[in-house]
Length: 218
Image (cartoon, rainbow, N blue to C red; front, side, top):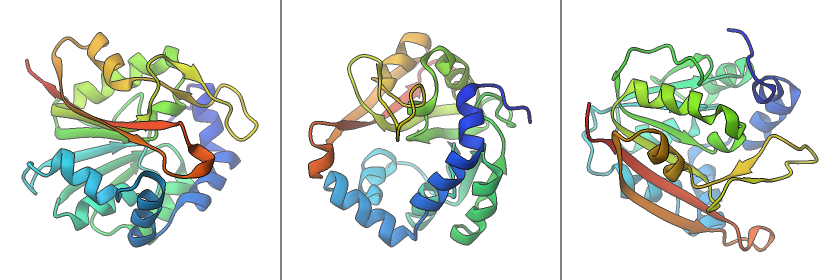
């Protein structure tokens, strides 16, 4: 798999490896981090958006890192879980955190799956690291592979805004990603969107958004 963007190069290297080491943790700690940061566990957030789906639903996470979100979904009862992760180190470390989850190394710009293969295709803090000019490509791949739903949890701003990231520029943005999907793909409709203000003092004033979009013509 060839690295195709500046951001992919960045995340495939030492910076991405350090991110993986810094953010990988057991599910109980992961949920407590969410409770401290947003006031709800990620399991509670997920249930509010996917609780109506069958446990047999086929779900793909694009940019799954070591699979914490997938493990959380597995503990909630979902059985057919897949992940694509750019960073080989994270794919290897995912073996410490996941069992019976299908994680492959690859790029969100070229998902190795058939059209309409999944019931849900999702991201969690991944689109924020894609340059705005490249968003149509990864979004198109997500929509192509989804039979029904696009689901996301990302930094929110009404307009695309660049954010410095650990001393680096050009590697982090916040936006209304649900709106960007809807603007590009007329076959999508917004099912639900919730906003989660940060509870921690260092992040006060920042907001994340979780959204669920559905294909209405497929």
